[in-house]
Image (cartoon, rainbow over all chains, first blue to last red; front, side):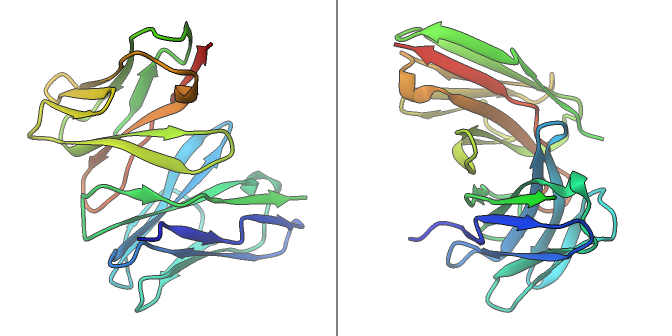
Length: 113
Length: 112
């Protein structure tokens, strides 16, 4: 069974631009969560989607948004990028509404210049 | 608000040693707790999941215990190997859905 995949793996953007990251969960998994990892703040929860609905949201500004499609694939969008948004963005999937074991993808490394 | 602390922050041991990583959390109302490892610049690999009703879980050379009432979990690694070098993270799941709260991790280096 294929694992969680994330695209792109690396991305360089300029301040003020926007970016969209994609996550494909393990086949059969319906929950997708997003996390941001930085050296200073560690791993922080962004949001979780289950059956195309956002179920949980972390403490991030409204510039961070996401959505989930009917095939459980998820995207997250960051608008008006800031230098502090440079981070590793990780996506995790689990089989159902939770709490269940979560499986992480390899991440997208975003660099904002 | 759940807060997770991992001790020690870093650990360097010679190959073959048995070692213990500690994790404490402030909110004992957890559903489960996962231990992960992360290699530099990579995603997280799930090692063990302990349900709140369990006391321990084993996988190969790894054994994780959970004392929910005292807000503690430990990860025991037997006969450590250089390939075990990584950052180890614990993450309890509380509240609604699949939200995990992570500690800062323990950076482990096993010297050959």
